[in-house]
Image 1 (cartoon, rainbow over the protein chains, first blue to last red):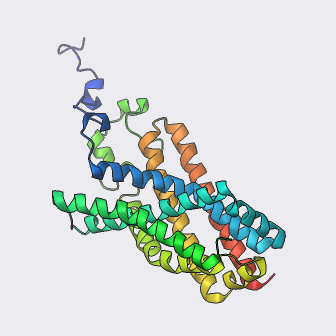
Image 2 (image 1 turned 120 degrees about the vertical axis):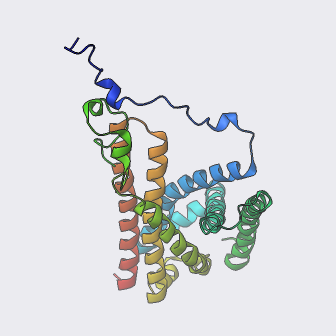
Length: 144
Length: 139
C-alpha cells in the first residue's frame, strides 16, 4: 500500500492484453487456395533439401568420371528416378505457385473465381509440365 | 531477429516500452520488409533463370562426365548456373527462415535453427559455385 492507496501493479503497465486469437487451419472449411498455399510451402522445403542433389551432381561432375558415374547410377535407379521426378514436380509446382503469388502481389486475380482458376492452373500446370518435361527428357536422353 | 526483441520475454515485463513501441519502424525483426522484398527479387530471377537451367540439364542427359564438364564449364552455361545457384541459395535461406519463425517458438532453439539454415544455404551454394568454377577453369 502506498501513501495514496494501492499502488498500481507494475505488471499492468506492459501486460499483454489477452485479445482473441485468430482460429487456425482446423476451424476452416478446406479451400483450394489453402491447399496450394500448403503445397507451396512443402515443395519449398523439399527443394531446399533437393539442392543437396544438385550440389552432389555438380561436385561429382567436377571431380571425375568415377564420381559422376555413381551419380548417374543413382539417378538412373528406380528410387533415384522417383526422387528426381518428385524434385522436378516440386520445382515446377513451386515455380507456378510463385508466379501466382507475383500476380497477387501486383494486385491481380483476387476475385473468388479468379483465385480459384489461378490455383487450378498452377496445380494442373505443375503436373502437366512435369510429365511433358520427362517425356522430352526420355526422348533426348534415351532414358539413360 | 534477436532474443531481446522477442515477444513475451519475461525480462520485457519491466520495460517502459509498450508492445506497439517495440515493433514500430523496422519491427520485431529489426530489418523491416527487406527480406520479403529480397524473396521477391530472387523469385523473379529464378523464374527467368529456370528456363535456361532446364535447357542445360536437358543438354546433359545421357552424356558422360567429360561431355558434362565441357558443357557446364563453358562460359555462358557456367554464368547461368552461377546466377541460378546464388539466387536459389538466397531464396531458400529466406524461405526456410520464414518456416522456422512460424513453427519454432523457443527463442534459443529458433536462433540455432536460423544459424544452421544460414550455414546450410551458404555451404550448398559455395560447394556448387566451387564445382562450376573448377569445371570452367578446366582443373
